Image 1: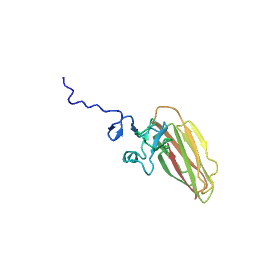
Image 2: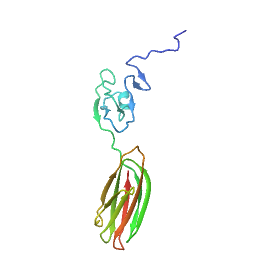
Image 3: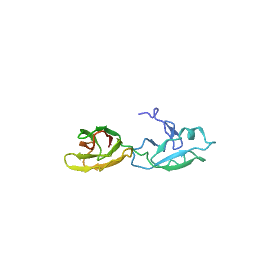
Image 4: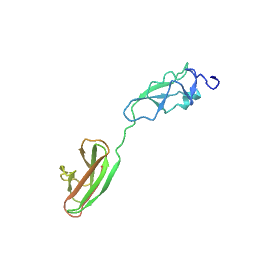
Length: 173
């Protein structure tokens, strides 16, 4: 058998443009990462690494590297809007069935002109009343349950107040 097709890659050589000991990651939102901050006089390799995040401290990128390496938190994950709508006037109601994580947040905004409220029921089990929602001031309510995600949620909302007001809502989870 011949070793003609095998090439040794030393510790100081590049693999796909990165030093062999470095591995770039996209991040899973649960770790802290390292990021290279090249200076103005940095080499082309270091400048190409600007903004990349690494699971392990990548120092040194190469011998005599003077780049700053900082520890950065993962980007915050913003819950997505899974449902939204409007409740308009006395007795108006909505029922939604959707999939989300283990926590949902319902945000209401009373568009006015009168104070009004909302009765909330989640999964035929947990109930909450918003109380009087002042026109123009958003108010949020959280619900949670345990299980393997995505979880199926069933939400019932009932407008409570005088006719003539509108309440806008968004469900994030």
